[in-house]
Image (cartoon, rainbow over all chains, first blue to last red; front, side, top):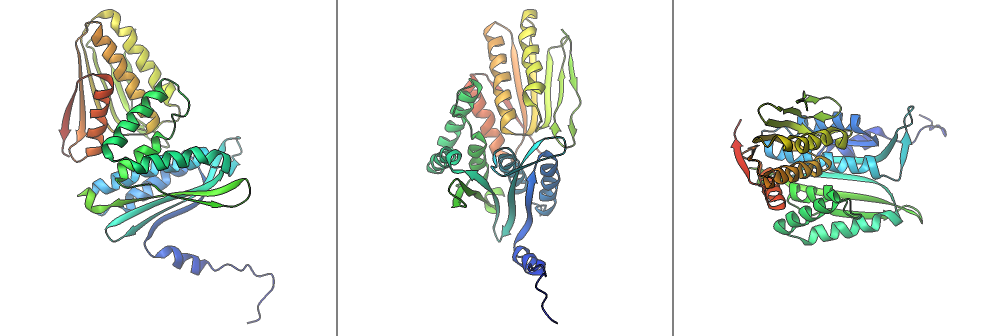
Length: 190
Length: 128
């Protein structure tokens, strides 16, 4: 068959195969509360293997990280009613004895530095210190102090019982693609 | 001063069930909490507790929240801090929190709230 020059050169089959192995749910596009509700329900269905504790943890982590994409992505679109929605990607995978949850979105380089610093602090702390850090940040937030954000990230690390694997890939002089991955070990959830 | 009754719902957002009774001093928040406008939902409860202080009557507060997001967590801290103030005014304040016995994260979170506010919370595990 002769190849047409104007043919759309994208193999959905290859894309499907790429995602097929170990990936339970993947989504790319605008994220808001409605999308979160639907994907949250899907996650509860695909992780329903009798390990309720793991399922609960994944749901909690999803709610925090997806909300970050919705509210803080530098790439956004507007609904007809004018509501701003953050765009991003999220993937949940299952690999033997653990689940992974990854979210990613475009960020402004000037905005992301404090977030990376927070992630590095979080990753340097053990569970008790993380709990102390969450208490401190929550106190500051209730007093309306600046720079008291990212309690959600502390919550994610505590819930996952694993570090936040962050990655920053420059996409232009001003922006980068920022991703956060966490592992949820099934053995921690027995 | 009036009672607060809010039926919980799980639609796009997740709203807990809330019951605050003036006559008995029995208050409860149960279910899950992920809201569009957290401040709008919880600030009337904080105001209710402040107003209740003038009665000087006992208050029995029961939390049965099994999930809440971080923006809700800040309001829980505010509610508990108000209850602690009430206790400081001589009101008998009893706080109970029902949590799933497997939910270690929730148990830790409640313990941290106790440490933060100095308010005693009775942890009551359940097993469905």
